[in-house]
Image (tube, rainbow, N blue to C red; front, side, top):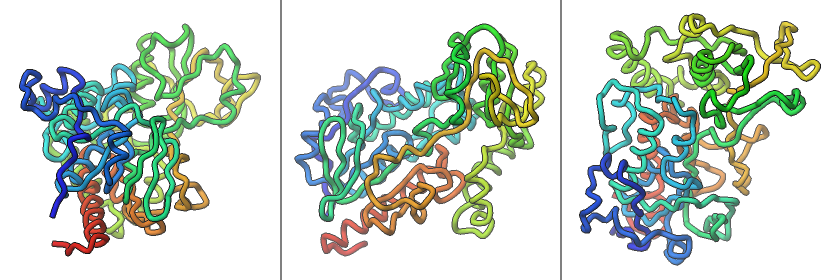
Length: 409
């Protein structure tokens, strides 16, 4: 037997753009996605929930899609004002590094030209449309402040109240809290400092030189944009670059299919010897440059510098001893996992959650989806998260049925 999704946990409309993307009619009163009986913590807490999903981005929505197919009672908690806000709040000119044909979640292809690279706002609207299309029970503006256990059930304490469930999926990527060097706070106070998550456009910066720290894809794209209005230094270790441009003929024909769908999705997994060998290195380094390459940066006038290792007289100093007298710094130095709200003994000595492909053996009923190399190199990518979501949702459903004494089909 399966359980129907409770009426109290319906998704509420948010705007025209995503309704169009979802193929829904704002004026059709029969559309469940347009109902105004918003899910609330109070209504959710009255239900005997099977699952809480923490995070309403592509990972959380993918999990919700498959949990709904399994007939489970669940709610998705997201801290953003709207579904997709994790994308909306990135820098203004950001486009995805993968073409549209790789940017759709299971059940709903991304609309538009296959080989176009969607903007961050188009991706945000698509996610909002996805939640509406499949009537997923998302509670926005709901931040989980603590996750613990009470007896055999999990308890999520949020800014809006408490909610319990038998099982929990933490569907959040590794990109939650910012990471900058400790000495950043000792730099000259007149230097404008932004993390890449705070950067929007060149108008935020002062006149004068800019140092972009971190030579991954975000650093390269931001440096190229800033080079139109400032003199720019790009510091850090060279991360390499893919062999062909993703928007060129060979990139479209070979690179995107071979790299994304074969190498990242099938060869580099925790179930292959190659994947297990490569995983520690891949977890510790940035992805090679995909769209903005070294020659593009050089032609734009970007100057390369070694890694920033220290400071002197309030200025950043490279590892070869040069002090860079800059007026602005954009730190593209990565993120912290942001899992400090989890009050459960599941972390190793480095603070990383211990799991096997997203299943936390030490805390039955707890799962992760969306982490970098959770199962494969594609696990944190839009095109790869669905496979992990389906596998975890199946595991959840089987455990739920066993606990109720129902035979697994």
